[in-house]
Length: 313
Length: 286
Image 1 (tube, chains in turn purple, cyan):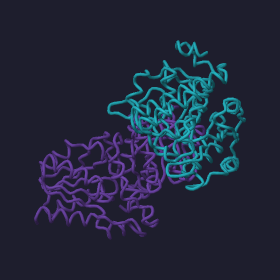
Image 2 (image 1 turned 135 degrees about the vertical axis):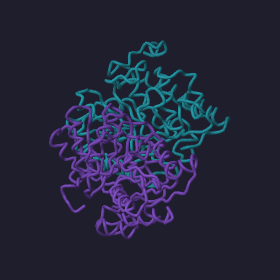
Image 3 (image 1 turned 90 degrees about the horizontal axis):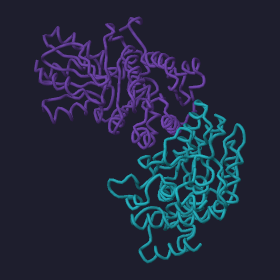
Image 4 (image 1 turned 90 degrees about the vertical axis):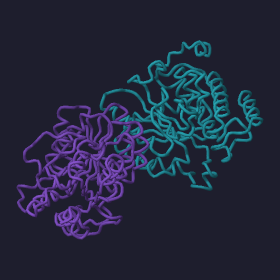
């Protein structure tokens, strides 16, 4: 993980896709709220100056203006830090989601991995909030490539999306550049003793944990559940049935996020023991991403520990 | 014109139709009657802000705006955004009179399985945006105005807000951005009736210097009496190049019904049967 060439930026994946989309589609517009530098959407403005609108530090207005553009047959990407986006939940609910508008809402700087900026910026509730809105689809990719591919698919899929991306670079997972699909969870390692289902910053940690578990004689399946809604029921149920034990891991609250979505599914369809790893009803704090993940129990070591406990070794 | 209207022959796709002030007053009378009938049937809703907004909406739909009841999504239409969505009954009354929805449908307002929701909603043909939570309509209007500019369309976006609505911070976010984007294809209108849900604006949140505030936000500000068509119509044409226009229209909450006028009580309450009849008698006579 120290090798920089093996790291990639989710924000770069987002904007690289956006630049390609903008080139082929005149109807795609981008909105920012004084964070176009952070989200790198200023690059869209450099290429297509007529189609980038910066509304200033005014997230509610950004959502409203996005809605107006979408009502006028534009496909809109609007984004800012996730923490600030959440102040516009009313506008997101009553216009974007309610009217099923073609607006892709991009929240960056989510989770503990936001680091030194502290609890104010480390949104741990966004997946939960967005997941409850009818019509809203929710995506949390884990690396440069998956962000790039899923953003391109989002543009081709009409209707509202929430995309959660991160401040920090993440190890490249999809070096095989395989085909990915919105709504299809990706099995990265097959396994028979336990299924570790993760999203975002925890996917690479789940992979590292699975390798270590294998050395201990535990066969762990690793699934990248990049689409939290609609949830890939088939893949998750198959994994639950195949292993009998499920760990969910995410840099998000255990309340309402991917872990909850999977618990809801399993409790109705195949009730088995499930361990939801995430932040336990707490706010974050300042610190380096790795320090924070360690303090809040979201490292490869904590996954190994929980998995070992569950398998009973 | 009235005959043409009654016969459904009015061509709303032609802008700036020559409709006289007495004709508009006649239409308003009928719209106010419809509002009270709609609300009476629903037994809930918002009479005060619907009656105050009536003349503005009538001026737009019957004189000023280019629109097509037979093709509500006509891409060249002028847009009317009811940001103060609780005044839905006024909009539905006007839409039915223009022919967007059959009169018979009005009785379904606020009832199960209806296209006429409690707050204006695009489920209804001719309604552009959902509303209810206040402060978002102007933002949406700005999005539509930006789209019009990108698409090289010459439509105008009209956004009707309340004065109570001015309490919302988003209104001022939107105000700044419309000026920044130099949008001259948007006209905002404030139905300044001086009363909000739980009291007068003076009591709840004073809005006496609204015109100054909007001028300070670099808007072209016009102040009028919002019940006087001879002031409403010319104001709609007093636009300036490169800056957005706002009309601050002084109105009376509950206009036309003596026991409702200026009363917060009738913001969201429908009178009982006896009082409703009294109200109907008054608006048809006025």
